[in-house]
Amino acid sequence: MTRQRILVFRIGNLGDSLIALPALWFLREHFADAHLSLLCNQSPQSRELAASDLLRDTGLFDGFLHYRGALSTVPLAGKLLDYGRLLATLRYHAFDQLVYLPPTRRTPAEVERDLRFFRLAGIRTILGADWEPPQPAAPQAASARPLQPQPLEAQNLLDRLAASGLPVPVLDASRADVGTTAATRRDVASWIDRQPDCGRRTWIGLGIGSKMPAKQWPVDRYQQVVAQLIRDVDLWPVVFGGPEDRLQAESLVARWGRGYVAAGQLTLGQSAAALERCALYLGNDTGTMHLAAAADVPCVALFSARDWPGKWFPLGSHHIVLRKPLECEGCLLVACADRDNECLRRISVAEVYQACRQLLARSGQHPPATTVVRRPVRQTTAAIQ
Image (cartoon, rainbow, N blue to C red; front, top):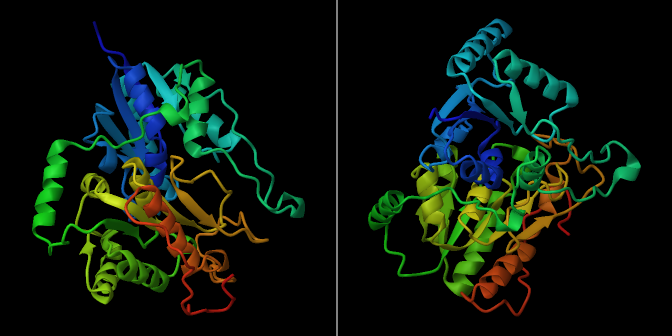
C-alpha cells in the first residue's frame, strides 16, 4: 500500500520551531505510517537557522523542503522564480494532505493567499485552516494596557489542529523534546572531556545573546548575577548561543575565572544534550531559552515587553519569567532606540539572582538565598526598579 504523503507547513526561526514541538510530535504519532515532509523557510542572508537544522535527526520528518521567506532581500523577480520552483516541487511530490501551522499573527488575507498557493500545488485536503486565532486588543489603544496574557503559541497550534477534528492531547501531556540521540550525547561527552575540569560543580546554562536587540538584557548584568552565584553556591557557568555570541561568552568566562563556552562550538542537537546537564538556565527570550525548556531545564527567562505576555513563555510550569510592563508594551520593535530597552533594564540584578536561587532550591541543588543581593548596578538613562 502506498504511504500517504503529508506536507506540514511551519515557518519561523529556532524559537518558532521549538514552540511547535508538541504539535509536531502529535502529528508524527497520529500519522505514524505516513511520509511527513516539513516545508520551512530558509534565507541565505539571515543568521537564523532553519527548522531542518534542529529537526533533521529527531525522527519527526521523512523529508524537508525550503523556500526563501518574504523577508528575504532577494528582488521580486527572484522571489517569483523561487515560488514558481516551489510550486513545481510540491506538484511533483503529489502530497495528499497539508497540515497548515502558520504563525498566529498571519492575517486573514495572508492565510487565504497561502491556501490558494497550496491548492494550486494540487493539495486538496488541508488541516489547520479552519481555526481563527484569538485577537488581542490593539496595542495602540490606551485602554488595551496593561496587555492581557495570551495563550502559549504551542497551545494555539494544538487548538488549530483540534479545530480540524484531530484528537490532540492537552499541552501538559504533550511531548516537547528534540529527540536527542545517544550518539549526540556521546559527542557532547567528548567535547566536555576536552574542556577544563569543572570539579563536578552544578552547571548553570546561559543565553546572553539575541538576534533582536530589543530582547537583550545587559550583558554586564549577567556577569554580576553569575559572579554572585559562583561566590555563594559555587556554580559552573556554560554559555550557549551561536557563533555571534562567542566573543562575549569568552569575555564573561574570563571575568568569572571559570566556565565553558558552548556558543558557536556545538550544534543545536549537541546544545540540547549539553543543556540536559544544567540544573538551571538563565537567559533572554530566544530560541536557546526554548531549547533549554525542551530539555526540561528550569529557566529564569528575561522578557522584554515588546510582545504580549504569555505567548512566547517557555513551555512548562517550572520556570520563572521576569517581565516589566510599560505604557509602550506591545511595540513589537526589533530594536528600542527611543527608550534604550527600558522594560528590560527595569529587571534588576537582585531580582534575577533571587529567581535563580529560588529555582535551585526547588530542584534541591542549593538552599534558597536568605538575603536580597544589593550590589551597585550601572544605570543608563532610567532608574532600575
